[in-house]
Image (tube, rainbow, N blue to C red; front, side, top):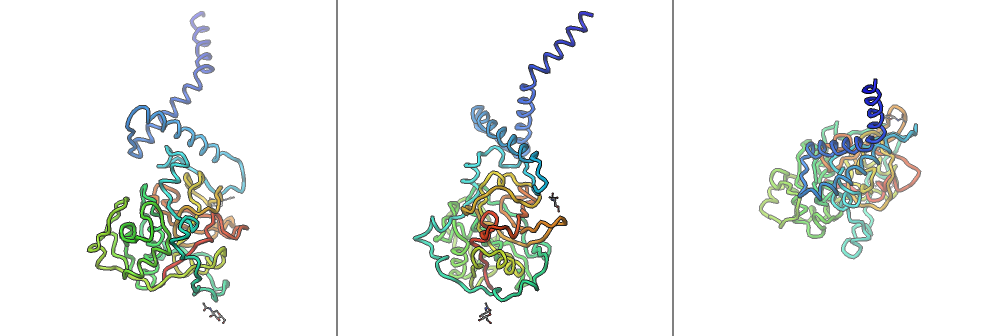
Length: 342
Ligand SMILES: *[C@@H]1O[C@H](CO)[C@@H](O)[C@H](O)[C@H]1NC(C)=O
Ligand SMILES: *[C@@H]1O[C@H](CO)[C@@H](O)[C@H](O)[C@H]1NC(C)=O
């Protein structure tokens, strides 16, 4: 009898007292498993302890966000490869769009207006949905790594699309050529797609990914490797600013480079669904709009191709809310859209 009583009481005791400890152990195990899954190695125990604190904070916030009961919430976050980074670290490592406020003196690319060839396309003739992936005009998802050259990936994806549409051949093209050779942009420290288009026009085109492969770091231009050119462009045009209807016209005809605010927490951990998360319009990232559509329950979205590998989002893509009240588009995606012409 005594034995049973003491067992019961110690059992109860262990539940009430050690619960937080168990949670901590479970979280530590999750961090270890996550490290193994993503091949993460830390320099020492101190760094691991610090990264664990960040990981735990992120996991808790992700779970809190996913548990919010809101029938209008159409997207989920998930623990991914960015889970041991604070949002500030993430933003500085994985974005890299330089807004005009940064480049104001160097780049005048948005002070001049270009023509917009899709201006007179009637909205009524546009398809309800477009997916350039399904039409074979989008190369597999790439990974910029911790080099802030999203601008190069965005420009290249738009050119890959335009080339496939014009010539019927899908060719993976070189981002590293832009990172190394386009001296009007800033390589891993950022850049603008229009400046990249100008560089490509001036230098005669882009070579293939395999001929000038991606290194994920700044390098010196290897001019031999920039040949042979796999494609060239004759120009580029800006989509009228703050006009999702105009953007829709352009995306109906070809993939379009867009600036976006992609450095926020919700963006960092986006996993699936139509993104309606928190973001601003301070553009810090670049992606490519490769389609649009409408889900069964009526939410309209853009399909954007990102350059953070296939473990982020919907196998590397995001569906993001389309036709929002704000003219600038969600996360500013209608502010700086442009496409190459061939
Ligand atoms: C709408 O449908 C999508 C799938 O098409 C789903 O992910 C989302 O949760 C749905 N949203 C609502 C509010 O039911
Ligand atoms: C659109 O139509 C107007 C009026 O017909 C014409 O002046 C303009 O050049 C057209 N724009 C384009 C881009 O074709």
